[in-house]
Amino acid sequence: MPTDGGLESPLGSPSETTPDVLDIIADAENRNPCHDIQESTDGDRWLGGSTSRGALALGSPAARPFAIAAVFLSLLLVGQLVFHFRTDIAISVPRLQSPLAMLSDVLGADMPLPRRVGMLSIEASDLQVDQERKQLLTLQVTLRNRATYAQAYPVLELTLTDTSDRVVARRLLLPDEYLSAAALAEQAFPASTDVDVRLWIETSEITAAGYRLYLFYP
Image (cartoon, rainbow, N blue to C red; front, side, top):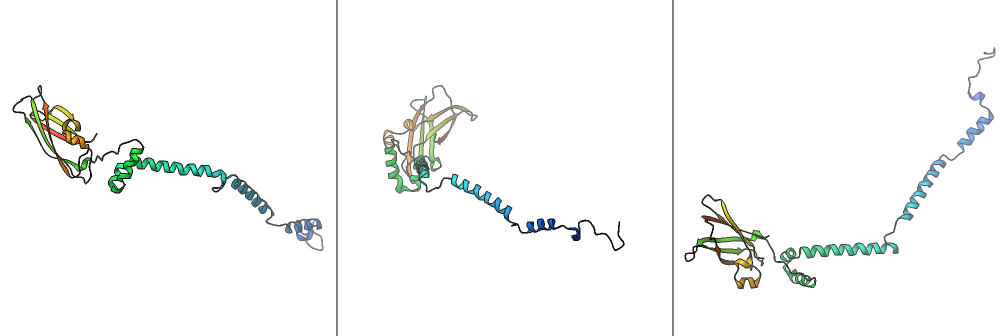
């Protein structure tokens, strides 16, 4: 109840604050406001330090075997790529052909001849019945290698057709079947060269009215 002398002081007003409460407030103000944050930062620093100690430094002796193995595997991969694409590399950089051929010899492998079918063409072809032996067909073909480097000889595919252009027979002609002995001895289709082919094909049970000729690499 209010007294006659004036109004009652509200609860919690400064007039009712005890000395003990003031001491607690003063003690809180004197604390370091960054104390808890500093502890958290120290914890993070400890965690970071433990992680860095667990990592393997690149220049440390323990890491050297891994570095040597990585370099060795990289060189091995490069060597395999060079060996696999040695023919293409020799075409692009002709001066490397001899070293690559020596590498093939050391590894006990042959230096494959290029097989770029786009640089080959059939310049002329003719298929006629042999006048002396009616059961034989005479195939004459002129092949051209338009590349500036020697290539492997292609496979020829001869297709015989009837009067309706339907296939009645098909045969694959390998280089050792259609090349002369001299051409086989060279084993390579010389650069910028034409090769004439003449071949006799037996067709005792086939009646053919036309043909198609195609070259490719298997």
